[in-house]
Amino acid sequence: MSSTLGTLYKVTTFGESHCKGVGAIVDGCPPGMALTEADIQPQLSRRRPGQSDLSTPRQEADQVTIYSGTEFGRTLGTPIMLLVNNKDQRPQDYGEMSRIPRPSHADFTYQMKYGVRASSGGGRSSARETIGRVAAGAIAEKWLHETYGTEIVAWVSAVGDIEAPAMDVERISRADVDAHLVRCPDAATAARMEARVKEVLAAKDSTGGILTCVCRNVPIGLGEPVFDKLEARLAQAMLSLPATKGFDIGSGFAGTRMRGSEHNDPFTRKGEQLGTRTNYSGGVQGGISNGEPIVFRVAFKPVATIGQAQETVDFDGQPVTLEAKGRHDPCVVPRAVPIVESMAALVLIDLALRQRARLTVSPL
Image (cartoon, rainbow, N blue to C red; front, side, top):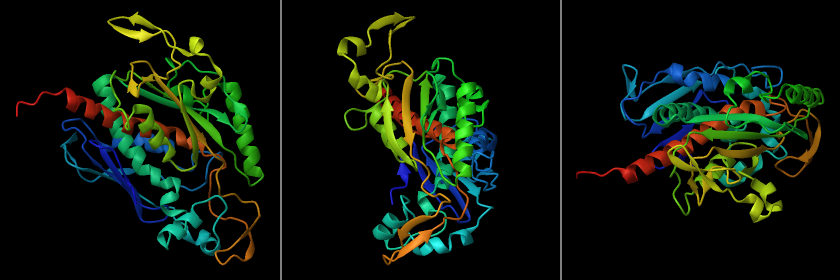
């Protein structure tokens, strides 16, 4: 499998939904940074299940333990092992589904590819795999903030056909986002979104949504043309997440309806360096960060596993009626907010370390 991300800051995630634990190995974290579990736990707590009646009722504290790579609260530059134990496991909920590929889930493709699969909870295709990403991303984010002042904030900008108004990407904060259960910072829209999620939950159904993310104070020069352009790496990272179906950056698809005279971002002086008056480029030009806020969106499909009866077939091709059991989110986007933030941090730290390596003149 391909379970490793990054070139200089490498992250390998491990674990399945109902195994004993999940986590990550981080190789390449710079030495000397203060780091304890308290630096990582807040993002994991924002991601964990059972936060409200808008999410899966699975109860997991998702407490992380650092097993290696630090001493006396500082990173050593050696591999950091991060582990979160699974405690509320119920593989018995998936007994019937072991012989039925769930519609739009990964059961069928995993079975066909590997000849075997984890039949409970989706295995590696479960969103529980993202715990390792979030833990590793929290470390990356701490280094980026201490080194460059980088701030990464994601929020729910759409649930189904309910869309939030445009936000001030220069000012929006995580406190604004977390003020509402659905993690939409606009109060009126958040109320409508919460009502929609409860509606689909009552109907034993699910709905999709869109997250918007801004990365502020990103240094100029990150991105490695041509195949590791910044937006290409971000797209790969975001589309590697469970349930994602779309990515756009800056003006995105809407920009196709504009003329060049409207879409171009004229340069202007901003303090000691150049900047742009508009930001249709989304902070990236030629695959390289230009110093403006990096703004992108990620589309998440409706959760595949629903409680409604569905007419399908089993692995032998025999017709069956499937009423999925287990515990699932009616809408994944509120809990995906810290996941998207963490994936952005993983991309940015790796490209930042690559740029720093290029600029460093070695005496050897």
